[in-house]
Image (cartoon, rainbow, N blue to C red; front, side, top):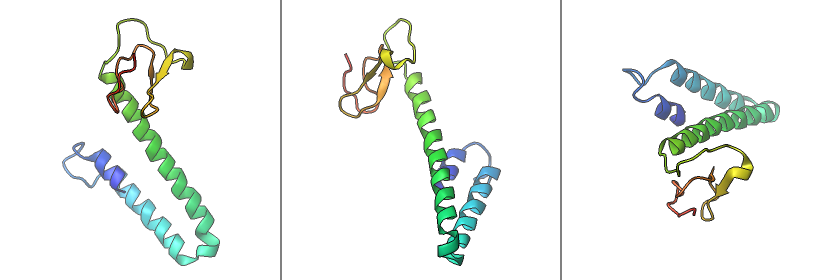
Amino acid sequence: MCAVIWRERGRAGSWLTRPVLVAFLFSVALHTLWDTNLFFFGLPVAIAGIYALRRVMAEGLSHQAEALSALSLMHEGPSTADSANTVVCQRCDTRFPATAIYCVRCGLALV
């Protein structure tokens, strides 16, 4: 719920947008099913919750990747997304193109 409100901030005049309302109704439905009969609804509620969490995390990681690439802390030259052409930060294990100079997450020099 908080992730959706945070994502939707500043997009509209009000914080109460359609995605916020959908997230609220989804969380209310999951809590209602969980409280109704834990034995019968427990596993489906857990699966739905984990699925929703994975989607939010995937969206956050894609936004992070866009932000990191927008910082342009790269050497000049071609850059590809192959795993052979990437470098991994030794401090925080974040992957970057081989042309990256610094880790934008922790600041460690990659070269």
